[in-house]
Length: 420
Image (cartoon, rainbow, N blue to C red; front, side, top):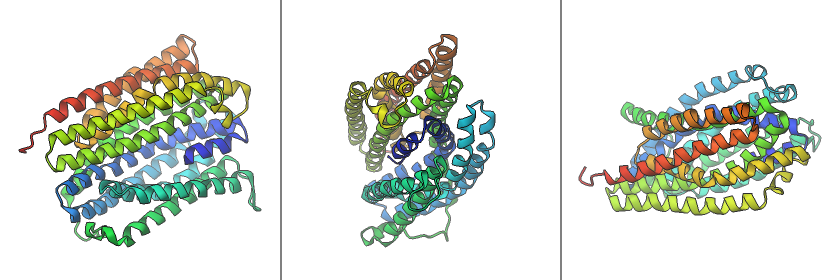
């Protein structure tokens, strides 16, 4: 929702800032997603430990997750900051590149609090207590919107900063979120038996390696996925800034429904992990297929909403007639790929609950970079379908990932031996 609010408020000052936000957010999450994947490595391990009634082990995993993720975030910071110097050479419209560079630089400083928040969030989700992160995230949206109002438009005596102000607001908000969740975990007495207090005295190299073994493939799987959509954004930028703004609107709305799927995916990871810890095959399959069924039902509802309101939703972001027209057409395709997007997002999660992360990574490599991107380029520039061609390519890639991961879980969950 923070991304949605940012896009809506930035869109009010023009389509060029909105296009710049689209470009930067794609590049930013392209690299940051490796860190997100690393943080998710702790969730199945914590869920399995809880299923085995090893409560103190959960806190140990949390502390090792902090070590692994903060170490990784230093490299992520350097990589993302370096990208800001490459934006002028990406063949983007001049007015877009000019605003994108400072926006990306200020966002880079939000990486460390983002990673800390993720580590504590995954810990709480792993022990089936997701309320604190949810409450803090809801409150953070209000704080972010307020700071946007101050910095983007120059209210309360602040300088009018435009897109840069949105980046500053996001960065401040993430520091507040990290501090709030850290204090909530440390001082919540009901989870003291999980030993969440900071403790880095006895580092277990085997556990660190296990976190990296799960986290890096998970991170690269999402890197390949986000990379596909980021490259799609760059391709749309070759077509024009209005098409890129429309692409950002449609992608922002699709990302909103995708985040709901990530919640179901996380729940699937946790429930499958708990069942795996108890060595219960029937419960593993029930948890996995229930998550898939729920995601498909919700995505069908979201698809209907997108198709019914395709001409209205874009106007919340921008009133330029051409931008709205392009975005309305893209929402038809976005509605079509909702089911596949839900299937692939949930498939990744339930397989992660089985600590099966390499096959989803290879599946993403094949589906996004052998199918989606080549088809998108072919349809957009050879067959002259423009931005619609790019989105058709994305649709085919998502369909491929979703179907393969569904089949993989069905096979993998049957192979588990309760006696192991």
